[in-house]
Structures are given as structure tokens and as C-alpha cells.
Image (cartoon, rainbow, N blue to C red; front, side, top):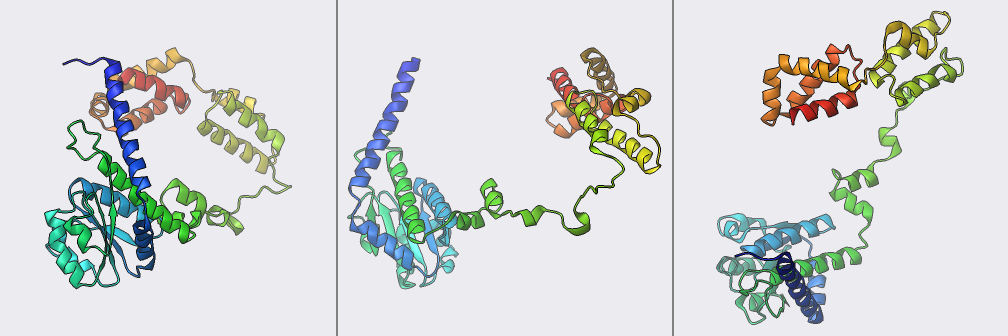
Length: 336
């Protein structure tokens, strides 16, 4: 069966329409039970354990992760694993956030007696306020939706989206009431870009004392000696590596008390001009590829390190004078 692009887009837009309608419906039914749930979570002195089976479990995992990253000690517990030992994680200071749209999940229902015995508070999220799970809960939140976005009204779609948003609402309410700050968020995300941005201070990365690179007023090389070096790197005449070699030459002349050569004089005398001619570079690349068939095969089989090895061989063949950017571009074209 074939479908036109318009028909496919109509299906997609209907999903958005149905799920948005479901979210609005849940929002309209928010009541004192939501307030009670937030107060229970705020009062929890232990851990918030989120649990659910199947699709509800996947949503529960996300809710637990959001809670954990926004200031609540939370984690996900699989109900089947709970039946085989993981219930030992719970104590009376903890709180269970149990998710089941039907409210009759066998796995969740099986752990409830032990949870109640441990005197653990229970908040449930379910689509059936008269379900067993809701009745055993200290606070029951209801996800009321008209229908699933699935045209068969079977696959959890609108209901899982609504549950996820309800979990986000709980997390955001908690972080707001706790006056959670960006700096607090960064402490849970030290490896991310936000963490680096908020946690890294100048003092963490700045050199100090003898490690601080300073140029004194009596340094033998002056700005007028080095500025042309930057110009030749910028216009592609030399590479960064060659610039370092030229700097070393100028420095040796300066500390020896000799007349300091100009950058262009060194480039001309030492033959250091960067090779940027495409034809010349392609000829070098072809020779290296012919002599390194194994590396070529390894790269084409997915080993990126082989590419770096080939670049190294090309730079070696050019005595470090080949334009690295052009080498990379031309080499990838030949290997594609």
C-alpha cells in the first residue's frame, strides 16, 4: 500500500493533535492530589524510588533521571528485579513512585505488600483511580486521557506522554520549591558542557608562578620579529609546525646576539614554504596510498586511526611542508 506525502503528514499531525489534547485533559484534572504528592516528595528524608513495568518502566526511568538531576535522590527500580532482592534497597525513609496505566500490573501489585510492610509511602500514577494500585497508595495521581494516539487505541502513546509530563511537573515543582539553582544542576552534570561552564573557574585552568608564560620587556625577540610569522601562517604560506621551527631559528639568532633574520628570509633560505598546490599534493597522496595498501583497507573497514597513519606518511613524504588541511580534504576524497 502506498501513501502520498500529504497522507503521511496528516497521520503525523493527528498524533500531535491527539497527544496535545491528552495533555490538556490531564492538566485540567490537576487537583489537591498533585499538591499532596509534591508535599510527600518534599518531606521524603530518604530516596525516591520510581518503578513501573513495560512502557511505564521506560517512562519511570526518565522521571527518575530528571528527579535525580534536579536535586532529588532518586533512582529506578525494576519491579521484577524488586521481587528477587532489590526490595532490600527500600527502608521506611524512602518513597515509592509507582507507575501503571491500568493500575493492575502484576509485578507492581506483587511488591506492594512488602513496600507497605516496610512503611514506605506510595505515590501512584495510573489511568484508573479505582485500580488496586491507586487504592493502596498514600496519594494517587490520575492520568485521564480520551484515547491513545495509536489508531487502534492499543499502543501506549498519549498515556505515556502524559505520564512523562506529569513526572516533569513533579520534578519542576520540587526544584522550584527547593530554590534549585544552575550551580546545583551543574553539580549533577560535571561532565557536560553546562557543568564545565558553571563549575570551571579561571583559577582551575590558569598557570601560576613559574608556569605562567610571561614575556619580559628585555626579551630578545620583539613583536616586530614575530608579527610576520603570524601573517605567514594566516595566509597559508607556512603551517603551524613550520612556524614553530622558524621561531626556534629566530630565537637562537637572538640569544646568540646575531642579526635577526626576517621571517621571509628564513622561509626562502630553508625552503620552508608550505606546499598548497593540489596537483603536487595529489601526486604525493597517490604514492603514499600505493605504498600503504593495508592502511587503506583498514580505513575502508572503519578504522579511523588508519587515516591518521596515512596523513602522517604524507606529511613525512613532504618533509612537513604539505598543507595539513588540504591533505586531509584530498585524502578523504580519494578514499571515498
